[in-house]
Amino acid sequence: MVDSITYREEVTPGDRQAVGRLVRATRFFSEEEIGIAVELVEERLAKGDASGYFFLFAEEENRLIGYACFGPIPGTVHSFDLYWIAVDPGEQGRGVGRKLMAMSEMLMAQRGGMHVYADTSSRPQYEPTRAFYLSCGYVQEAFLADFYAPGDGKVIFVKPLSARSH
Image (cartoon, rainbow, N blue to C red; front, side, top):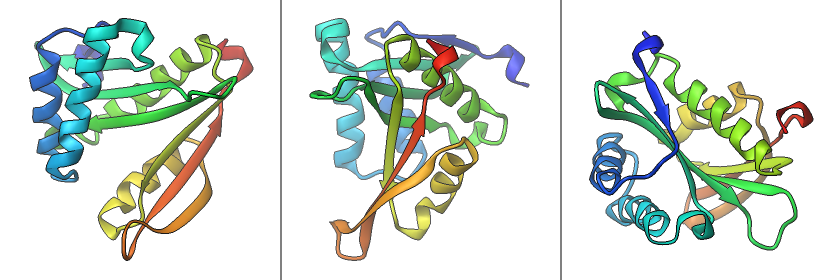
């Protein structure tokens, strides 16, 4: 039931550990990637909006069950990156990811975003991730073979943000 879920944008010191725990629980990410997820929280805590990282957290009973991290792409006028979107494996299938995506897109549009980019691995493990992006209205814009490692390419998706979201 998605009704019992609350959403917040404010980043708190406890989010370091909660984000690390959630990202680790997905079993999709390397230790280096988990460290990066936590670093983005730390960067936001240290610099606020100036960090360029914005967050949306989904919580239920004071427990983080999903989150998204996004921000404007430096050097662009109105393009945003979706850096992270992750949902606790035990909570998947409840619409949390879809709600996080829609709310994040609205927040990006409110900050002047006209396009959002998301990228992921081409490894078979990431097929559900790629299918999720497609189901949310993203289109595959590019494929960079062997980007992450031999046989592990980078798939780049894009979605125009609705002008009525501004």
